[in-house]
Amino acid sequence: MDIVKLFCDIDDFCLNAQKTYKKQFPDQPISQWLSKLSLSEIITIMITFHESRGFRNFKSFYNLYVRNTSTGMVGLFPNLISYNRLVKLQKSAIIPLTYFLKTA
Image (cartoon, rainbow, N blue to C red; front, side, top):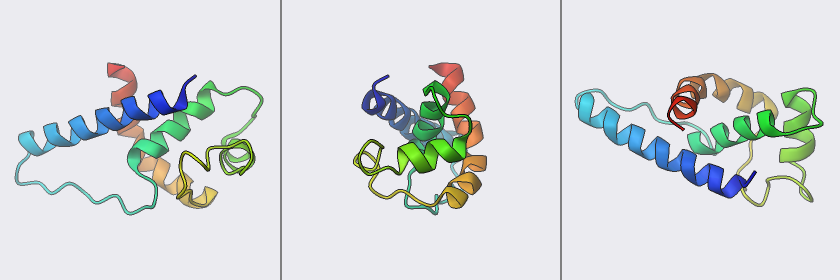
């Protein structure tokens, strides 16, 4: 799986979804994403976990693979956050992830 292509597809989807939301609900403010990681990056990490082999749980995948400086995604996502913070942010990424998977 090409992570860069996956990220680009997800990022394009998120940008288009934001534009569509603004058109349909012009008076509603879009909630600010308060994190160093973008919504696109979080969704990419979530999908990559489900496509990966050899990890029994998300915590070991994130700490041993994603945050690993030699083999992980640190070069792709330089602003990685702690595992606990990522788990909290995942909850707000579920709906965009579902729409992305349904349209992809």
